Length: 512
Image (cartoon, rainbow, N blue to C red; front, side, top):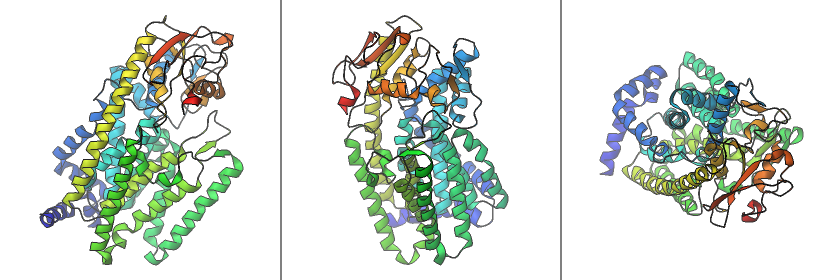
């Protein structure tokens, strides 16, 4: 049975893979178009399945997404002159998702526009990763579809970093085109840089860095690849010292040995660690079996993808996690966790080089079923919490300022559940502690003394930590907080001057 599956799979991939056709001289773009036409029904069905989690609840629970939607609403208010003290900056990075969200929100309304925008981002990342693996392995990675779906809804998605998420998905497409494209197609791939930069600068860095490494590796003989890898690794170490000496930086809090790409699957609680280790063990077993079966034929299959994976992991170990640039009000954070999205996709490039077996698909499919079952349960809880927040906000007069000290379960790796207050405020109140204007990293900015958002990142951080002392100028204002140790038990109260915001409820610092 296994041998029959393998022969069928080999026949399909050798004829249908865009990368196979490119290798025989057909342009990569033409090859990809033919591949899409041949498999249009399958690709449509897979796409529909991949975006299903965007619609299985009333709201998409994805951390910072609530802040993105709230600021899209603020943009509408600013454009109609209804947000005194706020303004829209002319900015050329970290805004692509926000532009997409605002455009779709203006057409369909923000609730529907949000779901469409997230679904578009999901498909770009999913099929971008699919294209990159196809380019690396010269065949379509059908057996990895369950794993790619897990990656698509991993930590980066649930952190809500959708500008970065979009930039990486687009850069995967660009690198795939550069890797297997003709000369003019490589120019097209690099010409995608402005669009990727509009989403996030890190996507451009990955596009040019990976493309440069691929170009050099293809020009030199394999015996020099080790030297190329060492030079590139030392360059990352040098970048570490440059950043440490020129900017304020700090390291990662998560154990570095856990950030190998599969950490993308650790989200809400300890039970995801079971999945984490299940993926690692199954991946190691799959690769070990494949290596043993064809020891004489490894370097063409694993070589370049393995080098890129090693370089990404070196970056994870030596680069700072937070960088404070002098030109921004807020720091560039979670750099290491962001890199793990690239790392896990390159790990899939290694898996895609294996000879496909039926038990591969069964194993990854089983893990994916457990993963999405957990995810449905946990996001259901967050949806119920957000419903409660909306009910509480409905009890206060319109146009009020609202602060929050909503904490996550201390076993959760996903942190940004507090932004459900931002989204719940749309059309009714102002999320006074929203971080985007004061960070100066997004379109919406605030003049000092405005009555809609806090003016300083330090105040916003202090509020989330529960240490903020309410000022007379902040009032009238309300606080949403957890009334007990049950994270879903939420209350609202009017704040008073000179009190610490955590006077009632659970102190965020004490709950960690």
